[in-house]
Every structure is written in structure tokens, then in C-alpha cells.
Amino acid sequence: MPSQRDADEAAIRQQIDKIIEGLRDKDLDSLRQRYTAKVVSFDVEPPLQHVGVDAKLRNWANVFAVFETVAYEVRDLTLTVGEDVAFGHAFGRLSGTLKDGTATNGMWVRITYGFQKTGDTWLIAHDQVSVPLDIRTGKGMVDLQPFS
Image 1 (cartoon, rainbow, N blue to C red):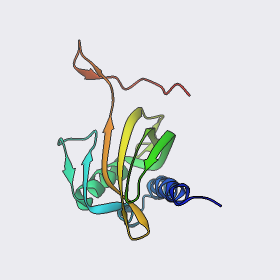
Image 2 (cartoon, helix red, strand yellow):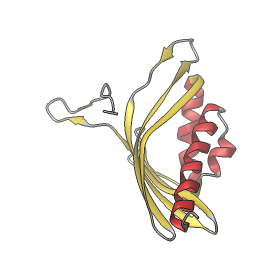
Image 3 (cartoon, rainbow, N blue to C red):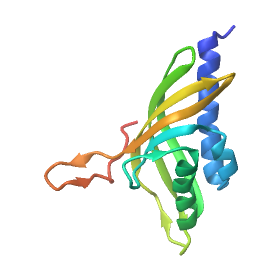
């Protein structure tokens, strides 16, 4: 019989799967259900932080305005699950077809998640998306690939 931690980890992974589906379907209502109301997001788009679910959803709406079709991949998701908080890290890649018909493979980013359990539901309370920085040039390195 699976432990409570195993069940919680499975529930968190299911939430990530629902984010992938919500992005593919361009479904902001579904995405809203995956975040706490006061989520703090350190995304790749300015400003330095986006506070609240509406700010987070504006970032996704910006993606939908540029992409005709959206694909999102999460690789190597690793989770540490406590009783009512959890954290995880992974690699993510947003790709698809732009509104002008151009296909893009996107870029791999690093993702860190902070989850909070409310009732029986795990929600994202914090996320951070980043790319490594080339210190000499001050530019993000967007052409790197995960090892696995």
C-alpha cells in the first residue's frame, strides 16, 4: 500500500501534468487552479517578480498571444514532499508554432517549484524559472540541453 508521501508526490506530479495540458490547450482557467492566490513567480519575463495568480496568468496569456500552438515539456522532475509543503526542481521547455507559422524548439530552462497543500490539493505557491548566465557577456545561455 502506498504511503501518504507517495500519494502526495503522485498528486503533485498530476498537477504538473495538468499545467502541461493547460498550456497545450491554452486554458487559463485550468492553469489558475494550479496556483495559490498569492503565488510569487520569478519568471524569465520582467519584472523580477510576479505576485499573485493574476500576474502569473498574464505571463501565460503573453505566451498564448505569441504562439499558435503550444507544447511544454518537463524533464527530470525531482520532488521532496513534507506534510503540507513540498519543493521540486526540473528542466522545462516551451515550444510550438508561432502565430506567423514559424516552428520553434524553444529553450530549456531551470525550474524550481514550491508547493503548498491546502486541504487535499497541492498548489504552486512559488516558482522560479532561469537560464545560466555567461558572466563574461552578461547574457543568458539559452542553447543548453539537459544531460538525460
